[in-house]
Image (cartoon, rainbow, N blue to C red; front, side):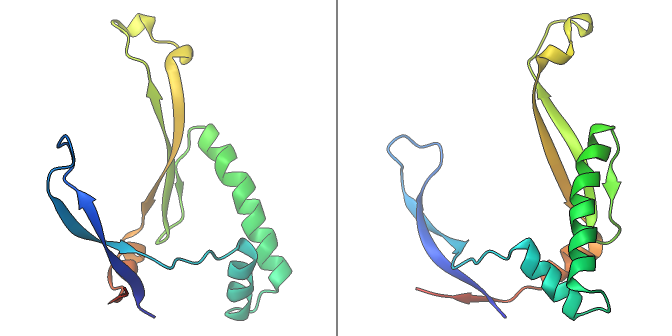
Length: 128
């Protein structure tokens, strides 16, 4: 099924007053898929029951943050890799840097090669 997109007018970035406007493609009409719908689909495509799939996915959701907090990167093969990154305040010397300078933790996801390749083959259809 093709992905729906539309033309959206956007001002020129960084120009006071907006400058000239150009049109860019933006995905539209997105629908959310719940974790339970995803598990139902996995169950329908495999020999695992809905409950088994939900149990595995829920356990995965418990384990990944725990392992990331232990400093591990989580590689899920062709799906991709999860890792943590941090942002901190700048200090003048290495000795001044403490955990109090860390202001934000982010979860990074790098899709696997096959996952990216599959998504890159998406088809698109323009809507008004």
